[in-house]
Image 1 (cartoon, each protein chain N blue to C red):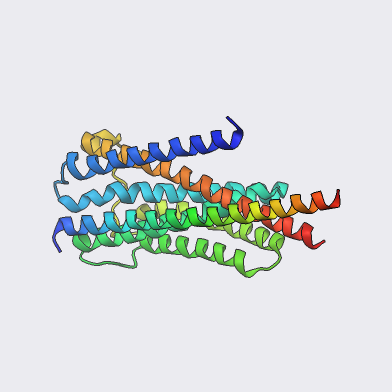
Image 2 (image 1 turned 45 degrees about the vertical axis):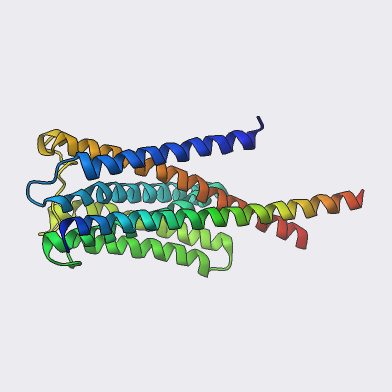
Length: 51
Length: 234
C-alpha cells in the first residue's frame, strides 16, 4: 500500500467510526427522550384522572 | 427563550464549532503541514493518534474523579459522569490502537508487536471494557456502580505506566517528541506540524465534550425513566 493509502485508511476508519458512534448516540438520546415523554404524559393523565 | 431551547441552541453552536475546527484540522494536517523528513506522508497519522490518546487519558481522568466522588458522596451524577466518560474512553483508546497499528505497518513493518507501551494500552482498553461489562452484569445498580467505581480508580493507575513505559523498557514505540522535559516542542518539531497538532487537539476536545454531554444526558434520562417506572410499580 502507498503511504497515502495508510493515511487514508487511518483517517477513514477514525472519522467513520466517530460518525457511526455519533449517529448511534443520537438514536439512544431520541429513544430515551421519547420514552421519558411518554411516561410523563401517562403520569400527568393519571394525576388528572385522580382529580 | 426557555431553558430547554437555550440549551439546544448552545449544543448546536458547540457542535458546529467542533465541525469547523475539525475541518480546519483536516486541511492543515493533510495539506498545509509538510511531510516528515524520515517517515514521509504516513507521519500525518500523528494528527489523529496523539489527540486520540490524550482524549482517552482525559476521559479516564474523569472516570477517576467521578468514581472517587461517587464512593465518597454517593451521588448519582458522579456515577453517571464516570459511566459516560468510560464509554468514550474505550472508544478513543480503541481508535488510538487502530491508528497506531496502521501507522506501525509502514514504519515498523508490523501491524502489532508486544511492545511495552502497546501492550499496556491494550490492557487499558481491556480494563475499561471490563468496567462497562461489569456495570451490565451486576443487577443491583448500586452495587454495580460501587464495583465499577473501584475498577475505574484502579484502572487509572495504568496511565502513568503507559507514559513511563518508553523510558523504563526498551520499546519499539518512540519516546515523546512534543511533551518532553528536556526540549521545548518548537525546538523539536516543525512549527507547521505543531499548529496542525494543536488545531487537531482542539477539534478532538470540542468533539469530546459534545459527545460527553450527549452521553451524560442519555444516562440521566435512563435514570429518570427507571425512577418513574419504580414509582409506577409502587
